[in-house]
Image (tube, rainbow, N blue to C red; front, top):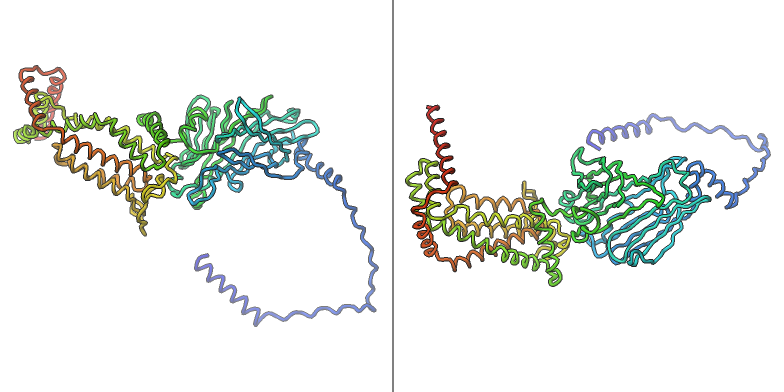
Amino acid sequence: MDKNQATGLLLFAAVILVYSLFFASGPEPLPERDTPAQAEVPEETPQQEPTPLTSEQGDSAKLEQLQSKFGAFASLALGEEKEVVLENDDIKILFSTKGAEIKSVELKGFSTFDGRPLILLEEDKAEIDYSLSTRSGEISLNDFYFEVEERDTELEETQVKQLVFTGTTENGSVQRIYTLPARGYELQHKLNISNLGAELSEQQVTLRYENRLPRLEEDLEESRRKTYMNFYTSDGKYDYLTTGNSEDQARPEKPLHWVAYKQRFFTSAIIADGGMQANNLFQDTDEDSDEIEKVMQSEILLPLTADGAELRYYFGPNNYNILRRVAPDFDKNVDMGYFFVSWVNKYIIVNLFHFLEKYFNNYGVIIILIVFIIKLFLLPLTYKSYIGMAKMRVIKPEIDELKEKYGDDPTKMQQEQMKLFGQLGVSPISGCLPMVLQMPFLLAMFFFFPNSIELRQESFLWAHDLSTYDSIINLPFTIPFYGAHVSLFTLLMTVSQLAYTHFNNQLTTAQGPMKNIGYIMPVVFMFVLNSFPAALSFYYFVSNMVTFGQQALIKQFVDDGKIRQKVEETKAKNANKKKSKFQMKLEEAMKVADQKKDTRKKKKK
């Protein structure tokens, strides 16, 4: 209520109060009532009380009403709701006999950021509804009551638990069978309709699944950025809905193999090995709610064959090694990066990470070991990079002479530099190329650590959770592009990168802007990585320190005098050496470019 509304309401109340005190008349006297002697009192006619219906008569009357709505399925709408649990070592699923439907799903061994049990599907936030098209109209199985039977059986040489829900009518039955293995996060579901096919107007089932995905992580903004609806078509194409206007909704033309409600570290999904058609896929973000990450809805058509309708559910963690065994390309629910770095994560980092998990339970130690192993593997490239920079360093006097001689003519300067490099057997990119070859590993970590569920709620040093930022100071204001907190690992990474850049500049011939850009980039990354997981900043910090140590160690074994001697020997060998075709073409191209430049200058004059 704004100020004007409040003022108007007070004035209105004041007017009513003044009127009632000074102007309103008193109450009118009631008319005199006749005394018993004067008034004739009519004789009371006793009312006949309705005859109560027996329970059988009541059920029969109710059944007649239900038949107009549900037809041959009417008897299933009478019953009593009960709850039953199906669980294994990893998951606990609560069902209701009303609808024979899932009410909630709890993942064992996991908890929310504030310590509560991790409920991936909550009764008051989600609904799964199976509907049938009948001669009486569309009916929902959630309106029917089922009898339930629990079974322990064997399926494909594996011990499984089953819940068999059965609803029986006069002419047939509706049966829903849920199967859960002793371990794992997959739930199989089969719907059978016996002797009621003539009552159906369409041989298909409409599945509607809505879930207001609950908040599971501390960093709500980051969780929302990594929450998508992913789907995979029967012709092998993966796609997803992003957040923003029309891209929040889709109706794929091709049948789907699976559709997933993917949160940052957990996924609930529907998988149909025989294919299913999506009527509509939709997602939305409730920005006003701090308890809901996103709202997702899907409407799916399942074919109803003589064998019934079958599908699988997945309610579980986004663990790459688990997801890749669920369905084709289901592992895409873990973002491993673009194609040119994803192979590093899938075939090297994931396997190395899980190998070290067998022997170490401290994930900070595991990160340090990963750095050392990768750096040891890339040591030959680091050594070549250092030698390349050392060669450029020892020929710096020759380069300085060329600058003094041809400093005013950049084209001539470049030509003479290329000629000098050819004579001395030095490549200006020899120090950079090994670093470029290491880039896939650096970029792979940019995707691996933010999406690694193994790091979730794992502490190290002052970081209480390596999967989110390690805030040591919460600011009372927000710095643009930085945030409202200070990450210590990010600061350490920045300082180590600046120190490494300073050390590296002593080994190279970089001048001017190229020299200064090495100091600018660490500061830029400080802003970028401040809100990224602590594990990523810690990895880069340790990587910088190990690289710094490697180069300091290599420096002890590399003699600049010997490198200079080798350069002189190469110079003597190449004294009478003919230019290569590539060098000749390069010089010719540079001459042509120089001539064009001179021509443009003359035209301007």
